[in-house]
Image (cartoon, rainbow, N blue to C red; front, top):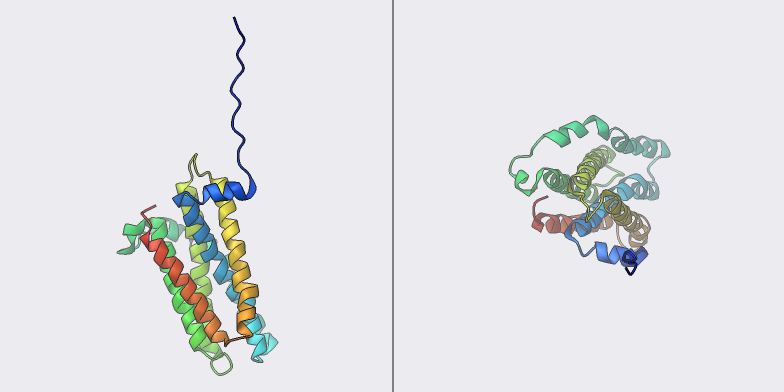
Length: 214
């Protein structure tokens, strides 16, 4: 009897080829958008915001106090059970996780618009409130995105692949909210930069609402 050899498994694509194939799937493409939506506010609120305040002459002590908004990301575990269990009325038709993500993105857009319309030199208190609200919404969005990634993971889109795509989108957003925002600020007002970033988030939120439930 002739011996048979097991069929060789096709080589699994790697690198950019794997990314290209993965992004053809709806879950992976959505995960890339969510990663970008998570990374952009963090870059704008934790790093770029300090550059804005320093440029307009805000005291270092005030900038240091305002940087405490970053604690929202450290303590988000305190309200993560609420995000996990509470269903949002009206928006719930988008899915439990996506409804929270869309809500947070809407708050972020309003927060950036508020920052763009506020002069930190004359209204630092109001400016700080907008920054804190935006940071709180950003941290809450991270909770919902992490939960969504776990919920939708399957054999076709494993959580490891979704996590890698999330990080890819997050890093791109860090460049946009960091280096690109600083380049734009040299050519336009800081308020215009944050308004532009808010419009970018609005575009991502609009695309997210057009996706099917997950």
